[in-house]
Image (cartoon, rainbow, N blue to C red):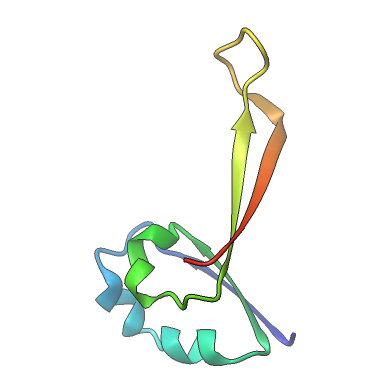
Length: 79
């Protein structure tokens, strides 16, 4: 891999917004790694062969507070 792209889609209103930024060209290049925050906002623009990585906070047993030092990482294939 030669390029890493971080794309934060939080403020995007729809898929059209990301397509105007040459998104299709970025994701087509096999030399690119693309990390996307809030991917559900551009779901229609995502290819089917993606890997989804979710970071989840862990709540200690019998507590409502999040342990800020612990995360669960979940990997999933597909969109």
